[in-house]
Image 1 (tube, one colour):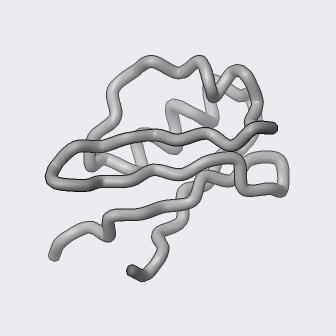
Image 2 (cartoon, rainbow, N blue to C red):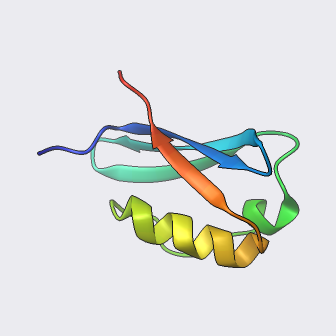
Length: 71
């Protein structure tokens, strides 16, 4: 089954960014008021969305959720 190409990233009760896959390239985008600890993340971004959520949660020190969006 193919993964959806777009996810929202939520932390501390609000959407703070997105994860997108286009033509096999993964990209994180952060909104203006995203926590700086997340914005400064420079680690691996690939198709393992669950692992990314864990890494971002550890980095922030609070739960981070990634939710797929239908496109």
